[in-house]
Image (cartoon, one colour):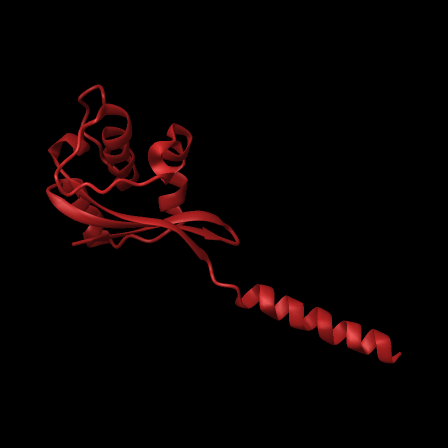
Length: 127
C-alpha cells in the first residue's frame, strides 16, 4: 500500500512538472515590412498578416529582396516552414491594430516563433 501511495505522489509530481513547463522560444527576429512584402509573385495585393509575413520571409530567403532592417532567421529559410505561417499565426497572437498596420506596410515587426504543447505558433508585435 505504501509503495502505491509513493507512486501516486510521484505521478502527481511529474504531471505537475509537465503542466508547469513553459513553451520554448525557437527563434525571434526583427523585420521591416516594405511595399515589396505586400504583394505576391503575381503582383496581387496580400490581405492577411500571415501572407505578408510569409512573403517577407520568401523575399529574404528565396528572392534576395531585403530592406536594410530585415533580420535573417533560420526557421523560415525552409519553404515548408513558410507554408506553416498561416496556421502558426492563427495559433499565436497579433493585435488587431497591429495587423492593420502590418497590412499597410512600412513598419518594423518583431516576430517570435514558439513551440508549445499544442504545436508551434508565432507572436507578432508591430513597432
